[in-house]
Image (cartoon, rainbow, N blue to C red):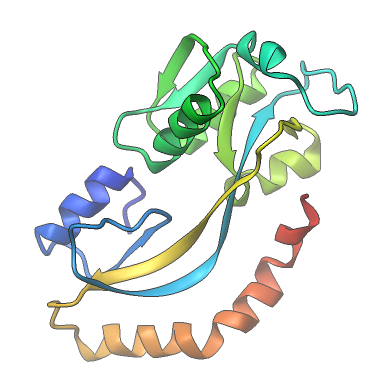
Amino acid sequence: MDVTNKSEVVRSLENNEIDFAMLSTIPKHLKINRIQLMDNKLYIVGGKQYKPTGKNISVKEFEQLPLIFREQGSATRKKMEYFLTTNKISTYKNMELKSNEALKQAIVAGLGYSIMPLIGIKNELKNGDLQIIPVENLPMKTNWNLIWLNSKNLSSIAKSFIDNINDNKDDIMKNHFNWFDEYF
């Protein structure tokens, strides 16, 4: 398993280097099969330094936040840029990092704020190291999908994996991701 950005995942699929990929944004130029797994909710998050006011922050307040971006090619970055553009938020880029883990640690350290997928910040929210900042038009929602090329000649093990996901997806969600809907 390799955890990387969307561009690298798509390249690996195109080059037949991998059997499956998990993406929240489906590449339109590929003919794929997919299993929709779960919602992907993206929020603006900050560390302990953010003092909540109990209401949504304004565009003016948002523009003052030092933002940390994921690298080019990241689906999270594309969604963040889309959010900024569609809401006419002008901002400056403070930092760019290459993984959600690095991004999360920078936010925990108080270096800035970013839009992040909820699925990767459960423990930090629970521990109070990160907090969701209420902003109008957030969360943005996409879906996590398991995808593979239509043309891929899958092994019997890969086919069994697909069957297992299809047969057990609801139980997996209920048993391991029931916390997900607690947030907004």
